[in-house]
Length: 460
Image (cartoon, rainbow, N blue to C red; front, side, top):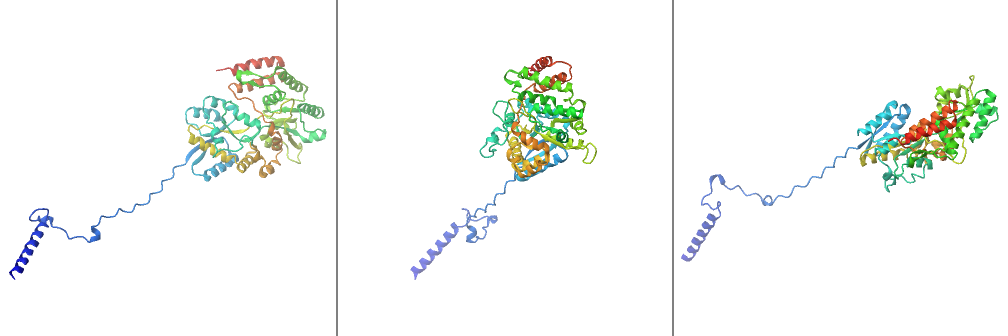
């Protein structure tokens, strides 16, 4: 019994000692303000799990890169261009093309100033003959790498257009393509078909044929048989068709053959003197004299066909006649017609804006879109596939000028666009007019022309 009592006393003392060791933080008595809280349930005592990560928000789409296009189009032309722009903008979300309409009368000066100041557009239309200052000053961003890119390029770009048209847009010898053509225009020969039928004449294929027709019209009706809206462009055609050069770019010299130039100057001047040829003079364009039957045929822009129709009295009224058009006559060894294409250039300063300009033009020249634009613009598409669409063929069938233009397509030529070339054109006009009006002879006029033109080609 004593032994059992001793065991109980030892156990009680041990429990008291363990209780004292388990309280507080080593003090014999816990502080009143540190009374332990009740123990949490077992599951809450475990370390808390990491909160489930919220899904990452989708990044805000970047704003489309704005591509500014300057245009002088108005009315239905601007409406048609806007439709193409809207279609492109809706087709993708990387770029937004914005058209800014500019006054035609101020466009050239305003564009050059804006580009020089770094505030110009990314994209605009330009003739190759106007491009030389922009190429020389490094203002044009070439399309070359984009066109040849295996992913975004334009297959068969060169093969789709007339050789002369491709040569014109790559003429600066550095291998770069600075232009993407959209439509093509040039001159055609409008003639009074009623007169031709009455005289049993056929549309002239050569300049000799044309001279014969002009003489017959003059003899029968007492009017000039032939004229041209631009004696400059027509003279250029005469000499190039006859095998002459034009400008020796390497040496900055006129390369128009003396004998060929004098021959054509005298040929035209003789016709003016005899009355079967005439200059346009103060009429500026021959559509009105043609419509009033003061001339039997003339060379003019295919785009001017509506002016021709509006100048002719309506059917049933006095003076009405049937009009027709045919390709420009040819002579000599080289087929040639002037190139008056509508080409676009890129003026962007960085690759992303340049690519946007390119992507828009690539969209614009896709076959069906370009055919639709050419119909609205009244011109010939620059690419064969668009010309061959049923929509364009149906439209062109009722347009005498476009039918003639399609026949001329592979005769497109070009003349070098170099510094001084604009003055060369001015001097050609002066030379041809002075000889035709009898102010000076062909030999003297040609010599004066060469001196003035060479000086212009060597300025600066």
